[in-house]
Image (tube, protein in one colour):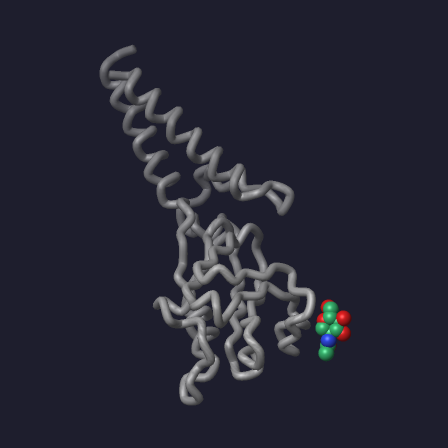
Length: 178
Ligand SMILES: *[C@@H]1O[C@H](CO)[C@@H](O)[C@H](O)[C@H]1NC(C)=O
């Protein structure tokens, strides 16, 4: 292979890995600080949802809660249970004090506190998760690795594995070129 061709291929690969890197999922601390999962003070009621509206969540990102697992918990619930603060039969219950929930699909997610009376006093959070293609706004029509993310049947872990495998393959290719 001629030298300039190699350079072109390597350049393309580096660019591709750059865009793959952009699509890496992130962990988002709920409320942006460690003591945010609590009953909001009256003047900042609904502050968690104000925070959530200003943030952007993409499929594959994770929400992280830090709290005292002896006193509080995180319940993932339906829209109805969110609205009525119903803590019976949540979709998921977390009480380890260091909860990480993977946002594995697009659409709304609803969380309420499992502590008695806390949800009624405003300790609740609703987030809307956007599909991966929102990461590529403005970059299209170049094909994006996010297309592997597919519909709800494909768990994000496999998408991450795919990305990881892709990066390794890139590395091997680039090394092989020089
Ligand atoms: C709370 O949810 C449970 C299960 O989803 C349901 O059986 C119950 O009637 C609900 N309670 C109230 C007060 O809505």
